Image (cartoon, rainbow, N blue to C red; front, top):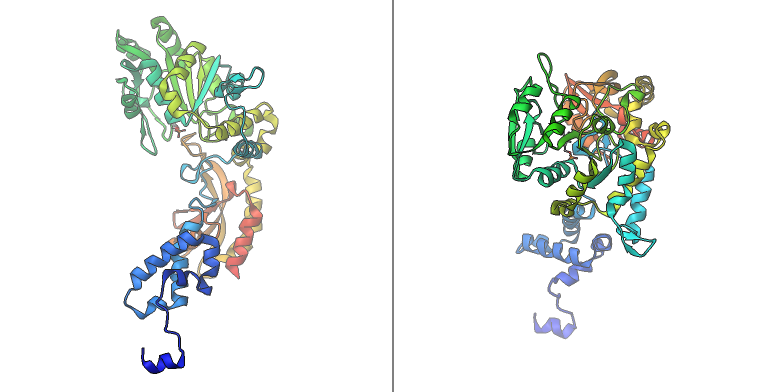
Length: 459
Ligand SMILES: *Cc1c(COP(=O)(O)O)cnc(C)c1O
């Protein structure tokens, strides 16, 4: 700085400090959303990246850079989407949607202290399972019930509690792997049990089980064939046949039902899926199934069966490690209560509502939306309406496809179009099949919001 400048009283340019940059007007809105701490962190990264370049002092460039860098942190990472894949219980999209009653119960439990493990009658300690076990017993005819984090956890817990250090007999036709690394042999090993495989992949007989029973046997286990079907020259041993054998040998008979259900799906014209009550009535000692598959509740693993066995299971230390929190217990209890009135289930439970939707109703919806859809995808593609087959998902009824209708786009570059739909404010997830991009409308719950997005796309 020259003597002359000083004489004229000019202030020297202040060095660019992070604090000064944080006061830049263009950064005001971002600071409002992100807070001072995150903004300062991001500004430090900007200065680091642009050190020694003239850009470092470019307010507009800096604001845009900080916005792009912080945006992902300021949005929830789990986004709402439209599941139009045709799979009702889509594991990667979060499985069952909860009933309003369950959502309200969960929200209320989140907001306040609750009687989770507290007995209001005498001010003493209560049992968290007591909120759901009476419902589960009522709905499945079981003597007792408990619940844990998910069905994989339920299977692990049951095996560890009833057969650790012993052999567990399973048919080779039921040694399943379902998505997400759940494999019966691995769970068995983690539970400290030795798996004894009997029969062959396609055929297992009662005498195979009989021959495998020895002094080391701790339990017999049946597993519902989720995600696949064994067809053709097959034979498996039913619960009814296994029960007398297990009783005679004094062994617990366990069944992993997978999805399981509490109501007969045939009520709504769907194919039969085994219910937990059928398994209990057939004489299975301990039955496990998921809370967020066909049952239509929150993620949970439900365990129902004989009182003495459920007590042993609930006392195992793994139960404590896998237990449910008050929020999910509240949602589960509210969901189970809906089953007390099966006639209204189809109105109140989103899973059953989606599964029971008549194809003609879906078709009418597709016809309503088709003009908007055609305008949204533009003239580069041909829009149409197509009969399709969807599925329940999550391993239930893997080969029974649900007749439905889809909005369909044909033409070159379907991947790009699918990508455009995934980038919408509420991403729309469909599927590409035989040269068509399909949006199966069976699970379209919010038609107005979907239509509004199509209108924006068209404009
Ligand atoms: C889905 C399924 C499981 C795992 O249940 P989660 O609730 O996802 O842990 C276990 N066994 C079978 C047969 C299943 O279908």
